[in-house]
Image (tube, rainbow, N blue to C red):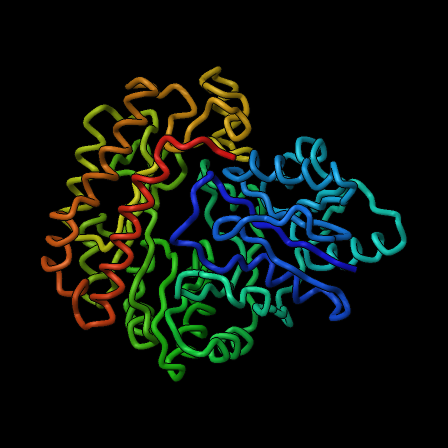
Length: 433
């Protein structure tokens, strides 16, 4: 049987910052060796719609849903069955089934194997629902299907799934609930050791969900002599011994979701704990004192934001000399409590912005309280471009030692900033699909 895995692109432009899509490495690891597997990553390459295939499997994110449906429709016109999985079909299976023959609701482990059995028997069902959260031990990530593709030289690795927090804008809690799972540390360390070097990005939504297990992981990484980065919540600064272990294990970059400088906004999004541990400036100081470059992200447009918020937030990110920063318009994602609240309040500009042909990347999707939708769109874009001016890039490089400590960091800093600058200008205002 011939399987075509497809990773849709968000827009018509090719990507210069694409990482290996781990979802397909998991599916490939679950697929018996006698199957013929081919991956099309549309961020990097054209899809060959004429290539013979017995089934097409598409991972669907909300931002790629419109393009995923276009791709699926073309394959189905040829009589090729399509299976969709990911966050978006899990939250909106009925929508996805208008373009797919089957959807996976939840994680794929244990479900993908049933789909392959049903395909062989000619008995594919419309929905395959994951009835439990599968154990993560023994997972096999088969990366052979990435060979020859022009991904960035940052290797993604997954240690855990889920997050202990329930921010109202985030899809993670909506997907996993309160469930938190980690892979065995020895298996993660062995996988990293077998990657053959290069920078490792641990893709967990929050690596710091369990301090005891986080310490076990950091200690296991020390002898591997790697450089790595991760996403982590700022409350890790309460644990100086963990910061020290992260430093010793080779962590160089931490992505922190600061989200807002306004405490009323943090309460509204259920993330007020963000400032319980000495405030942002103190947290940043502790992280940088341990040698971590900081990628700060902000969500703008909550009900206590005003037209001045964009400049205030930008000034904070510049003053703290972040390695990278992103300033995102608050976007209601399906499945989240934010989406339901804004829909109930009648504030959505598009009922389903992800499939609306009039929506453009970077635009506001709802009516903010203290500004117009256009002011939200332009304010975020102004903050993004302001942070990524050439003068800002050079200033942030030299104003804090962590950004230029050695040649490796210098190269990482410059490459990531120039890629970020290019992608921001390229994507803004582009149509999805």
